[in-house]
Length: 195
Image (tube, rainbow, N blue to C red; front, side, top):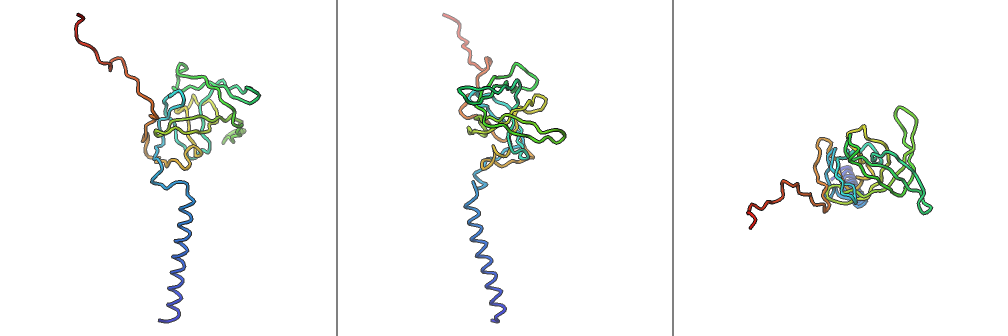
């Protein structure tokens, strides 16, 4: 063999060795292998814990932080610490489907608006049931009643947990131990006459 051919073989072998070493190191650093991640659609059902309130949520990988619909937002102090009180409407266009929530204030978040001044929003931490698993997620509070979905799930809530298929919706269920209530028509009836 010529020296030129031997050098080419050595270069190729060293390149393959480097790829193997760096590829293994990269795989070890990744949070979760893709086959262990949940697959979500662009809209999924979630449940707000501990109430078990089920609602659709828009999954948006373009948003860093998740958002939750809130009205009558009031920041106050409880035991010397900042808290937030608000009303969460979980059915669009219906004030009857709401719940009052009080949570510790995690932080204030400054959001840059595309067509206006930046705005400051309170951020809270809540537990949600997503894809049959209860997870803790941070939500900034903003009035979303004019939008189609009361909750928007951003990248932070999904990181290391899920992949998103933007062509599909409702790929998972939000059960997390919740039992579906029977409707009155579903209850068995006793057809025997009283004795």
